[in-house]
Length: 456
Length: 182
Ligand code: SF4
Image 1 (cartoon, each protein chain N blue to C red):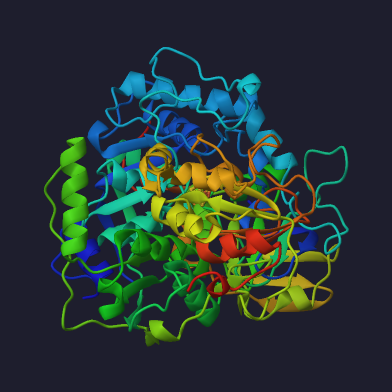
Image 2: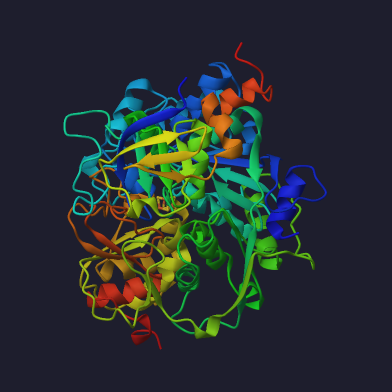
């Protein structure tokens, strides 16, 4: 069996499953957020009754992160709906924006977008929060009401996005019917050259198979190239399985996974036992291809979809209005450090927005010192507009007052994961997806730029 | 109940993602609240670029679309998992989408909610049919007839009874998978 088949077999209590089979699986973790949570709760109450209790409060994780720092009253209300539900159900894992369990969330526009406006329990973007707070474990099944839930596949689990109705079903039953996907294997060899990042790997692969090339399928990553990668890098790659239409992305288990997960579950007191899925000798793939990492170059996905692949070099000189670094894919500490390495001591030429994925990233950037200066300061001194309000922000446009949102038809280079028309705001704007290095180099020149010009 | 619908069709091309079906700023509407459901419908397909799609899906000042059938190219409904997408289309009055192919989560959400019938076409209909053409979709024969030509569609198979029942909850109750409403 492939890794995905193994996890699904175990979760459905079977010795063996194969691609194409429909199986009922027991859910280990369900995640929802402020955009889909209220609707999911609505479905749950409609179907199981007003007094219904969720199947297992410890397996439900609720993370407000999408439309938080906005004056839009409906968005603020949606965070209140989550709080009320968490209180009513006694949920231990609700990462609220404010600390008062009886309070109401209201964004204060007077204080502006940059200064922190959240309490102690707030975390930021859901997919980056899940591993940090100890909710991702090898061998488990994770569903989330968000398409990038597949990011947790980096931790050797089956993780995928679902809609509100399916999530409402899980809330009541703890189970879901899933079709076992066929698996495509991506076998990585060699090492990434200087200036090339995990983001380039996934943009390259999506360009290769087309952005519906993995529809209904699992993307399994293997090979020595994978073991050389950090957990952050694996997350970047697993995150974008959905940009190729994939059902999930999944990585093998190794010491890095083990150390990362053990550390996080211990720190947070979450469930500490898990059973990784090991690689079988006998696996059936519908696609199997070797990629040599040492041949990859800084890669860009052009408007209007993540499959429009070009190298940064080919696009050299394309002029830009804006640069953006943030999101689950591109707003981790390692992404900002890469970005900072390029812009340190220089000045950006175009409007550049920095939105850390989580509040922990904010803290780490402030705590990390380079030559006596914090990375946060280095970024600000280079002219990057850094906000402490970790969230999805303009990655998906959002309400009009969202930080970094494009309200006019601009051209933006972004470390995020999706560039369909209108994704970051205005429907005639254009988004180019690239690695933090490439976004940084392009911010410095105002044009799409191969970052190797700046990295020795 | 008649198993056909006849309606003018709305035709879109490849890779229509859920941000175009229902842009992110409207996701503050909660679909299980009745009036917000109606409102979501009134914004269906509002993210389509105007130059490529000069005909409005929902006429100005209206809440519903005159197009009960949408014809699409490849990978319809890709991108975000928002269930708001099939719901907005269903709330606007769409009953079926006939596409070259669907993105997985969108397809699944159509079935789970029972809002829309997602039909796979056997040939590239979005190149042959124009917005405003009147078509008849026959759910029993799995055919679409338009401008005098009848095109066969891939049968819906196991998902049909789920959508007929009005989504997975009704279906699960009917088949005894979960207990009936008390
Ligand atoms: S950061 Fe962007 S891609 Fe990630 S969960 Fe938020 S909106 Fe989705």
